[in-house]
Length: 392
Picture (spheres, rainbow, N blue to C red):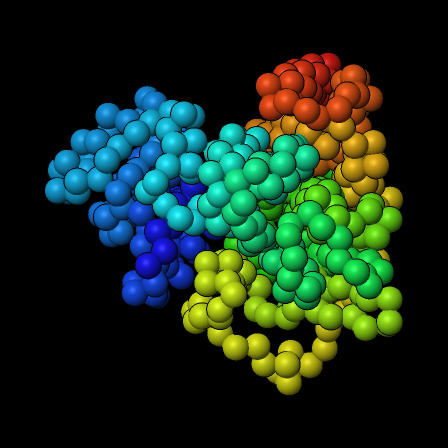
């Protein structure tokens, strides 16, 4: 029986993870559930799964969570605050940690799980984008396994020879990350000025949260995945390509020196990757319907439009710059997306804010988490200042 901690239990990844866990009660137990401040949803999950520990990141929500659990007769231990998330990730209550907290907030708990030697199922790409060298060092020290459970990197993981995370695989020419192209595929720069938050959050293929839906629409999500692939698989920036595949059936590919190209195909359903990570090296039922290639009939591919969707080349530039540049990119993007969702910034302005922030934050290496958080805060303040000056 594997005990599973789901950090970000009320989000889309958390919901999908718990669906897979519930299908295999003889194999998995949801022993730790954590959420930011959605107390009602977290309490409902605790009633259903009866975890040992429930964590709410916002301490102000702790009394309400305790009251709800007492009223429901659930004897789950309750903790609150950032330190509680670290305890949930590194403590004895779980063997497997699903890191699905959105944004930079998930970084400390992800590093804690890695240092503790857990099997780490990584859905929080910001953790490795911001602190790739620190995460790889924590994994080496802890001796645990990291399995990516976002669909693209999970696909690459399945297409590569098994080895330690961060090591390049012999004989690989390049990694090909597929992108749906988002809801604005084919639009020009002028038309993108008309995009509203509602349009940006209406992804054609995937059911996701608002922030990641906007990232998909700008292609920043794919840019972050390029940086993530570099750290996960030891691939240089020039050996990682992005190709638009609007059906979202081929989740990514690996091209080898001998001309072979291996691909992982499946329905656009996160439960496939999650089930793979939970049960690896075995395969289990995930609740995903089989893929009917005859009914699908065709698979289409085209080049990504980095000229119109400028977030993608900005991510490549940050990867090549190295050091704190990916963290600055991530922080500026989070602030710009938040401003867009609040109606304070137009859609093309997201890339403009990121580019100017990268130019204004001093570049340095990544060696300590505290320094990285300082750079993150500096980048956020710079982005906020630029947004206020240009778009308020």
